[in-house]
Length: 209
Length: 225
Image 1 (cartoon, each protein chain N blue to C red):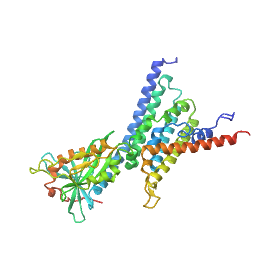
Image 2 (image 1 turned 120 degrees about the horizontal axis):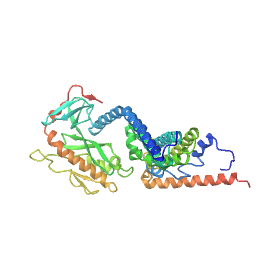
Image 3 (image 1 turned 45 degrees about the horizontal axis):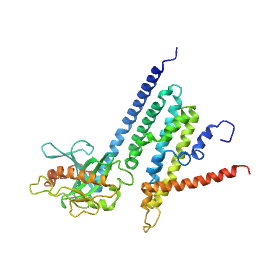
Image 4 (image 1 turned 60 degrees about the horizontal axis):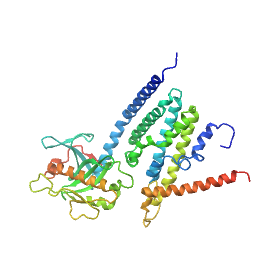
């Protein structure tokens, strides 16, 4: 960080969106990133579910950080995270069974998404409630945005639709590979290329000549 | 107050967190269970209409210990259920049955339609599965695999107590008889699992219903689409 003043709550929120984006910069949470981004709806749902868990666990962990002995902190964090994931699992099944079916096992796997434990250990366990909330929200939205960029590309190319709406005439032959796991790797690497190029240019521009 | 010993503090934290988390999960479960149940029944009814083309009304029956079929409310979830589908004139279109079995990762639950006229399974619809997205989930989307269930033969043998030809899973493109199921390359376990669960379910149900469609006559208050 180049600024010398301590980061504000807004900074904590914004860093997850771009500078420390969990997917494109920290390269965390690759399992859901590659697995459920085969359609835009799945990507958004997964992103929102993860955001909810991230915000709730950051809040809870930040609130109890002074009372948790350091020997048992990871266990306590995992317990809390697993609880919020179970709540989300029930909530999604209550909101929409087809969506629950589409996300399948990946909802339960949010528990082991390293973004969540990562933020708990790196941030919420050491900071007050408000910055932790901003941090969780920023990371969650950054994650959702990243999943959406992948989901949109994969759905448009792989199924010829966007959010289920057909985009091309019937003659369009969908690239089935894009909705298969291999397509996830292709799309992710293509986006990373774009993001890294953008960040490099940004850095070059901000440095004094 | 002196600082508690580390062991006490650790135990207190873990027990406390466990109690709070347990409570939260129970509250979430209690709040969502009735809604989820309603969603399931709705999805099941929608699936019945899907696997029985032409049906506009459905009623739920339960197989009794003595082998008879009794009409039960649509909300029933337990027991051996069969869902009859009726056309606009009240005539029986077919029967839908639930089957479940172990897939690649978890139990697959599906509903399949049986046509009395064709004496065959005429469609399947997966209700619940946790198969690998893009691989195992192809059992739901692959048109070639779905075509296995346009008319999957489940006719009974001469004695009427067992299937004349048990449903059999074969390698992709090797289907020769109407009772065989072509599997999907790359989703062998999932596609075999579905063939096996259909085989088990049909072997149990066909002797019970195939010979007597009259036992599934439209009762009062059938659910209309």
